[in-house]
Image 1 (cartoon, rainbow, N blue to C red):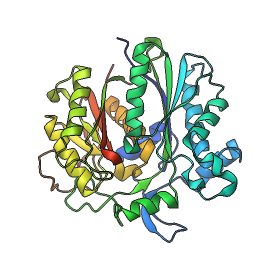
Image 2: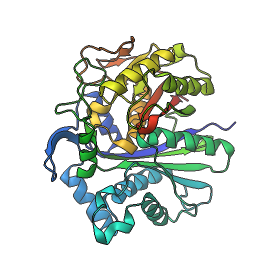
Image 3: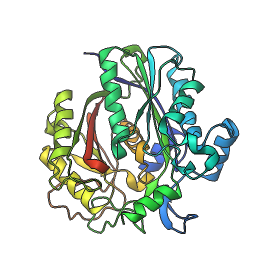
Image 4: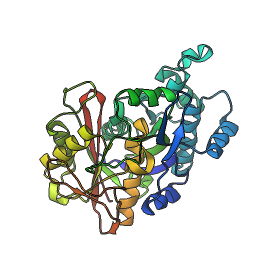
Length: 373
């Protein structure tokens, strides 16, 4: 079976648009989350792009592309340039991971045709002259992890040599109102797994990761060795009460990678800081038998929806290669019902691999395992 290698990546988020500087900001404990007021009258802590970043995108791509599409194109162009691959070749596939796409354009009569996700996907594919239809992965908040699993399976078949993963969602009043209606938002900085957690902070970001089954193309940053998806079928918006289903996905990802629970370096959790999600994830990690340190990167970037799985995987790859265990900001003490080791302080150690988890509306769960080369 072919190996799946990391080739290149790029990021655009509230902490910047340079991969290394964004990672260094995270390692220094910086957060992109700030209190913002929106046109719908809501005020919440969120992580959004700076005005200078928006102006740069608009100047670079112009009005023919929506803000969402501009974000996607920016990271894809950067990652493709780093990878030095031929994006117009038939052996190259583009996968778009997003939950909302151009949802900010709902209600704008002149742009109503641009809301369906396939509209942006086609525009992105045409921009790069890619001959293959762009695949869209939109599986709630596991989209970014699910897209990695899809890419892995396709690359292992040998059907493609290169896959360009683009994960993106922009924050809009529509999205904010939706999470507000669920009473899922925190009025303060989110505190994943903490006893004082009161909800999540939303964010926006775009991330691109290029993967390949060609050893010569590998960056040396990591191999995607395992991945699995499950569904707990518990509730439209509420996660499993037992965590067994996400635990199953974690165990299957470890089994595919040939790793036992005791071999895991750390877990990058979904960690939304909502009561039900964090409790479920703690149980899932416990069911999987993992006692390694656990962190959530949501306090740095907010919950970036379709980008979150790729953004947090990218930061975890950099942490693994730097030998750094990133802390969960604002964590003090846990009140989840099973013991897990939530990492609260930055530390240095040799890290052979990590597991990235995700959970989403509809009961979907996913996990991937990345290892050093």
